[in-house]
Length: 169
Image 1 (cartoon, helix red, strand yellow):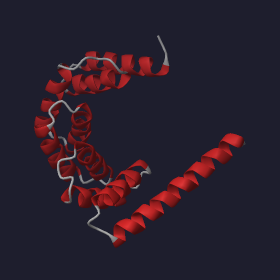
Image 2: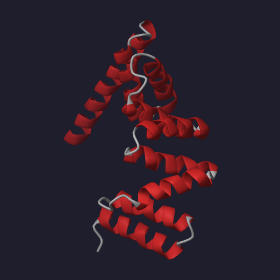
Image 3: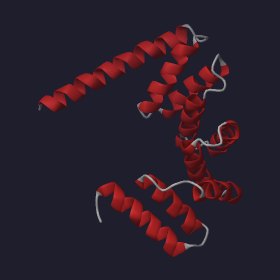
Image 4: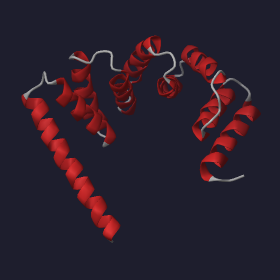
């Protein structure tokens, strides 16, 4: 009960902050820190359409090359099924930040949605050269292996990732 009350109080504070930031961003649209905050807060609260709006504005302002904002925008575009826009942004992001693991994984997800085999191959090449340290690394590598025809290896990798994530041995 106490945890629930704390959670509700926290959610109300976040919502109040969101309203304040969004109303400020509407009044002062060229304030990049405000539009950045509005975009990231909307993204963290699963409001992808609002996030895309504010993040585009922030990226067109003083932060056009910010990889965190670019990735958040790509994810928001993916969530609202604007896969081509998401992929175009991810191409730019990876061109400038070729070691951005999250961008590569997001590209893989978006490429799967549109069955973009060329991008899937690029993602696969990237993943093949990455260490398998976290459960999600095993999962992504497994999905790629399965798509590239190595079905059993793919299944084994996905199973290993799930086992690592949930403590199964």
